[in-house]
Image 1: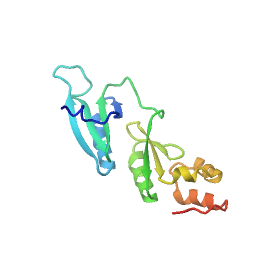
Image 2: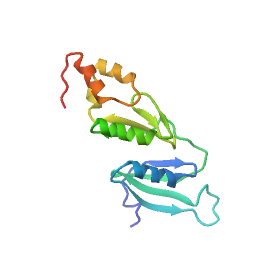
Image 3: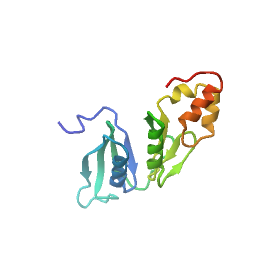
Image 4: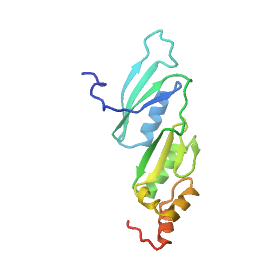
Length: 162
């Protein structure tokens, strides 16, 4: 059985210009419990943008495939990956690493140096932003600040539970 046959039924497939291997190395350096699985090389003489066609990898148990597809397509915010963080320290760490060389967006969104969009959010985020004051606070943030979101909820007299 090939590794493709044993793969999860759905795997995100990411199109890069000609730097898929560099992107994979970067993501492996950011996420713990991650690993490169396998590479598929272009056949000799094939006019691809790089010698490596695809790189299969896992980020914290989630399988991905990176493709050196050429310059025809770019990433947009229409697709992003959410990182659930259990502490402000995790939010800070992922934000710092992934935004380096990229760009910071609003409300916990950023683009990494390869143009891929990420949402770096605390685990309690869905419950916090149900509160209108926390939602208003979040709309003013780039990197999310858990304590500030909790203060916004508490200012309305609703206790937070940690």
